[in-house]
Image 1 (cartoon, rainbow over the protein chains, first blue to last red):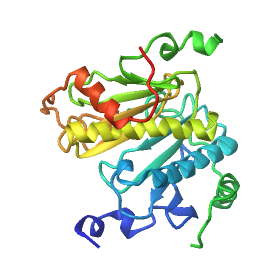
Image 2: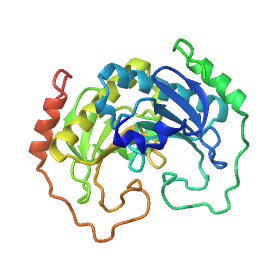
Image 3: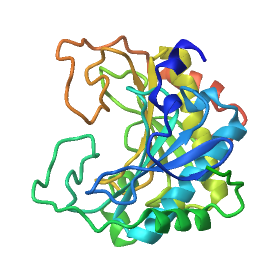
Image 4: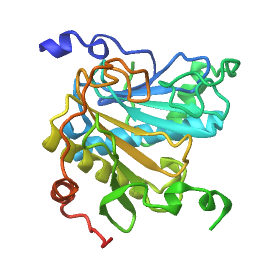
Length: 147
Length: 147
């Protein structure tokens, strides 16, 4: 383990409740009461940028990201999906897949922008089991590994 | 043209100086003095989400996004790349490809977050011709169309 990996929280821990995982990546639930369904897709190995992966691995990772998007749209019917790979604080490749609703806490800004709707209330949550099952359906055909 | 398209600024205009385009999408330069190299990759047709595209078209779009990332890394050597598809205000599929530097105006937050470094100065710019040429190299093999 090199220096970067030794100090990386996504190397040291799963980064959340794991809903699905393969040999290459994992999907974790993000605890954000205003954004139920918000998940992160984390590449298992410490890699910095998408262009550091070979093209076939980029494609495999995006296939999982888009399956998470599909699952979120089916379960939560958001008005918009936000996708982002940032990693300024944790430069270990991970994607945010975020459901957005007109009138949610930050809408129409990204969730990292200022709060627009102070009065927005938390939205109904869905249990981890239901999330994991929906994800398995969306990811059918991609080899899952045991926790 | 339906109602959504009639009111969409990315249907009505290119959305910036076009550096490269294909039959499916275009790459435009974003004028942000703190983030030279910042580009947007815009799907030409009015589509809302990545999962509204067939898988092969998603893959084709991401190939262009990753080529833009490669071009930005080669020309500007940023500390990090930020990728995002948001579209809360303009729900017409487009990707932000943003070079980030430790100490830049918003680092380590996303550029939509609060300003962290008021004193950060604008970075050296690169001309459109050089950007377009570097993009053509990164996108070699993908059919370009005339402006």
